[in-house]
Amino acid sequence: MKHKRTMLLVVCLSLVMTFAFAGVASAAGEPGVEEVSFLSTQSELSPAWTDVLIEGAKSTSVPTSFWNLAGNPYTATIVEMRHTSLYTNYYFRPNSANKINVTYTFYNTGASGYYVTIGLYDMVQKKVVSSWNTDRIGGGSTSNTIGFFNLVSGRNYAIKFTPEKSLSAMPCFRGTAKVFHP
Image 1 (cartoon, rainbow, N blue to C red):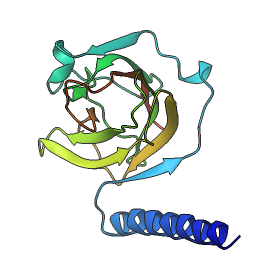
Image 2: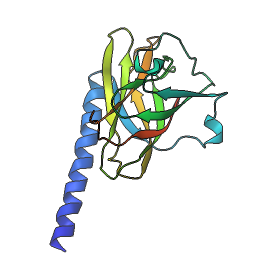
Image 3: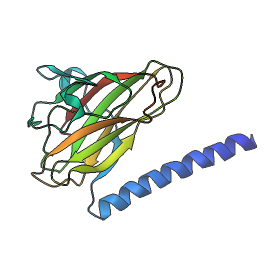
Image 4: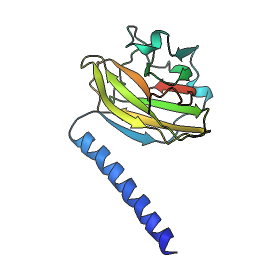
């Protein structure tokens, strides 16, 4: 019983710290990330086509083309990611509330627990300005929706997916990601 209370306290404190960090980033006017509830059904977010991201293709470099998210969500299918970061094949602008959301599902083909970092790449600063780590994925999957907020109006951003480790023995990640305006 004492162990359960201790674990509950640890979980509660972790949540408080997570939300406190998001609040500090928001108050400072810096880009931040927040976990949000699933905002739409799968059918409401279906785009005209799905973009395929794979190591060895154009997805390993910063995108050079724009995708308008206004009423047209972008979906990427990640076929293989083990050694290298992958970018969306397009960059995006935030909505009028200066937000961009990402819904993801990642699968790991191995039994080891690894995570994927989802980064918001600022095309002007040429670096990731905010990021989120998925839950550890070991021989299963993880799904969630995150929101990047306090973005600069009119600025272009890409989404960057980075595996936790770059080892030849590392299992392969695959999955989908939808980028959309909340």
